[in-house]
Image (cartoon, rainbow, N blue to C red; front, top):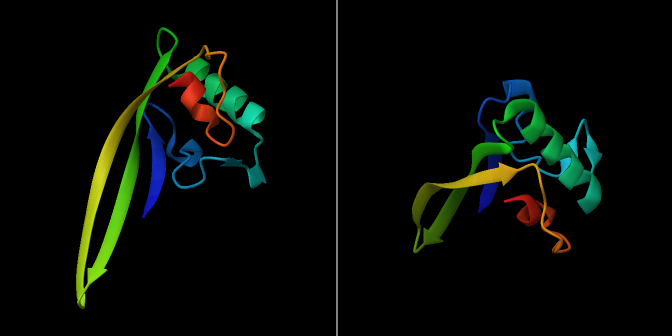
Amino acid sequence: MDEGLYLDNIPENLQPRTHVRRVNGKKLTDEKMITHYINLVNQYGKDGRLNGYFQKGVVILRDNTLDTFEIKAPRCFFNTRCETIIEGYPLASIL
């Protein structure tokens, strides 16, 4: 299983895709990640919101049979965050 993040109205070269935590080749801390995505909401969103989705891909191999499927999980990001930040899952604080 793997997933990538895609955000509405964001230029193709800025789409996070599978590098949700990496920006310009640098791994972001939880705090820097929140700040980065809030900045994207402010720049490309409307009224403090930015829609997007996680594209999840799954492959299952059973008895030499390969099954694949994809799921789009819609999300709405906000430019304000809740006080609770779950370590390792910082984007949950702005969803």
